[in-house]
Image 1 (tube, rainbow, N blue to C red):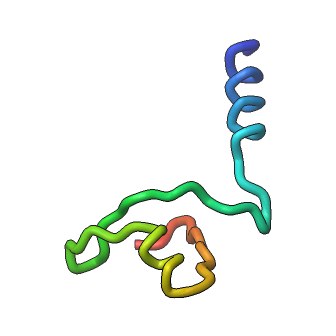
Image 2: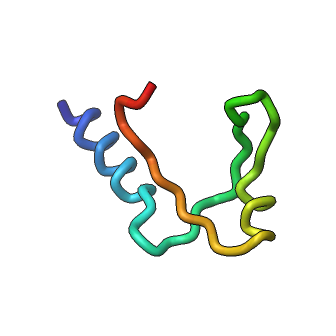
Length: 55
């Protein structure tokens, strides 16, 4: 149980809060193109939305 408590604490400390800048990352779009957060930031402000259970 101690391990789980420590793990939960580490995750909570590393989580982003509202308004914090997300680190750059790469992902693949629905059509297979590689996209990066930094490329979207060059076009203007970006808002990330995470939807649980979608798909």
